[in-house]
Image (cartoon, rainbow, N blue to C red; front, side, top):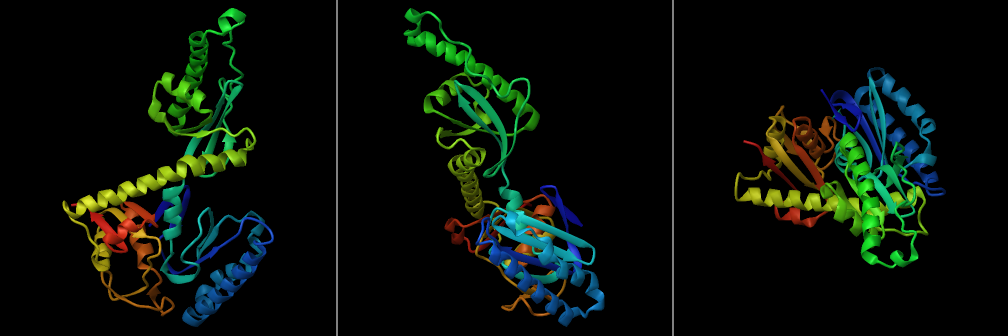
Length: 359
């Protein structure tokens, strides 16, 4: 069985499954230590595999491990690196979030909580830089612009609706009408792109221009936020970071807050599971509607049978599952539920982990 996480499919059941997770650095010279750490983790994984399985059953994984340090380009690292290896699987994910499960994880299943977190927090959107001197439209994911939209409308040229008679130029209402006509055309062009992509739009502009746009917008809900334009920071990477920091990241935090509120309301309604064993059983039975986990929480276990386990402290114990939370999150997502990882302490009123089941 597998689940599609943003275009990548990671196989669920393999034995053994090796997950290597490490925090990485985007720039030199800090990223030089990433290569050293990766080499050490690969050596640790090799030793544990040989000790537990012997060389012959894991020969393919051992070959992949020995080649990994030379295959990873540390010059293009993000904030964490995750490697998934089995006898017939080899995948790598570079994520824009640090990991809390740094190290080597060997079990019957991959440790995928960071992949699920990244899937939940990957936010594609449109980014529009709006001014009377022209309008550019970009496609972005999180804090990075991935391309510029170029079609019959975009990029817009400067506002052609200007007044040539100097005596009329001072008439504020007439000037406003000309601006509204310009922004009305921009809005219609943006909505056309939205209808094709189904992506929301962040606007970077002056407050006045944003106000004009909102007055003429056919579908204001398409625009999810606004950030003030800084003409000294117009490079694409600066625009992407600005939209992420000012609009998208707070929007995602608000969604997590709403999910916590939904969970707290369920306590008095349909009920919430907070016992780890009950949460696991509900998840594998397909009854997980909403799972919320505090990001600092992880729990290694030793399975007793298919439905029950003992809690343990040492995740390197043979046959241990390094983190049962990873497996629970996978089961919830794979069966159509929602999973939220959060640092917000409001969830701790329910404990480190809570599941709203569907009945």
